[in-house]
Length: 516
Ligand code: HEM
Image (cartoon, rainbow, N blue to C red):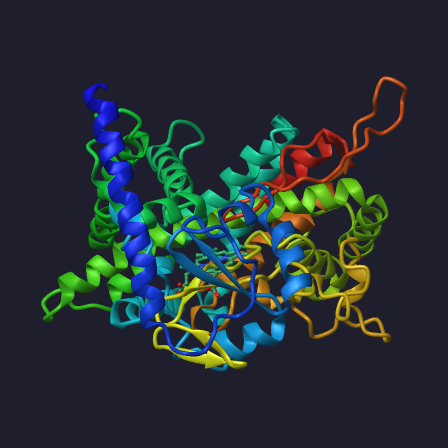
């Protein structure tokens, strides 16, 4: 046996010992009430094979149908509870939010030092300061500050779509990244080879690679894996973590320093960092700590806006699959805005169908099908079941009867139908699908910014382009079966799309020039 394989064998033995001991310890200390029902699972491994890595929501749907609103699972040593109904989610994450606003410890997080990120902070003082920084800059009343920049970036999006119409994903990412950098640091990335854009991509890739639920469960069960050196055979995650740590150092220092330097020269445009820095007196006690928190909140803000790009991909998929909805939306824009200018925020109240399309996009396929996992602060009992301290709670926003696809609330939930958001008198109803942005005290802090970013893109894309299924060799539209990538965030798998301009290129060029 070589040195490598004998070390691995030793590690495996050690790991098995840790798992069994840890499991027995946790069971003996749990309160007398049982966990909610759930599939029995295998000894030691638990329900590892009950949760497929691809499309886990389908498995949750089956489990929900069999076991009901509350489902208990165990992955190796990790117990978790899935909430499968709006009622259970509201009861716990909203009505008992004091006890359900924590986040579980994610071991891989400490490995790369993502611990500064708002979504990962434990419920406590640092997290409260982060929320305050966000609320001051991004609360609904302040969103008008960013609308000029959002429209400017929307025009850039239209130009990029003309240049490379099928490069949808890249165009959407550039758009949302440009908005988030402007709203966070008053920074406007260069069209090519921009260092901030490059480093943001590295950071996002590291996050997706290391913080997936599957890797988190493995690191929780085998914590020693996190301490293997990066030269150890197979320890690829260590090399990913090394890359992540270097970029994070840069993120947490350079961009905020850059804003500080520019503020010395004179006023800058409204942005989260500028707003937060202007509120502190650097000579006051604790100012260094606040600057450290501003850095963390700002970097979290950039990661947040990435999700809007995934929502726009869902939107294009829906337009391709539901051409009548697209025609209806375009007719509304034509009637209200005409063809001599492009839509802007002053048109929003007169374009209710576009708002209904936006709501239906968020509902039809929530990009966070399970919001962001919570954990219980103190032992609790709910409906007679045990919710022990520290257990991760997964709110199932999407399936089966849960929330966005609840058949009682949304008849025929899997079809894309914006009409479900209208009252009989033709006005929009009160259902703003706010649940896609999460619940209670940890609800998304960027929702007002995301809403205007999405509206501006959707209204303008529909004013200029049509999205259709391309034709096959027999002249028929290709059959597109929607598929969604699983994971922390879910977005459509690549699908074929034909993008046509509804107006002459020359006309668009002149409209974009007028708007500039
Ligand atoms: C359409 C786009 C977006 C969606 C669907 C979305 C959704 C969510 C969801 C589901 C959560 C978890 C809430 C919970 O635990 O209950 C969340 C948290 C968060 N979001 Fe968003 N978000 C979006 C855009 C943004 C933007 C633009 C920003 C930044 C400006 C942002 C920043 C954050 C932060 C910092 C948190 C963590 C809050 C905390 O843990 O206290 N998000 N978001």
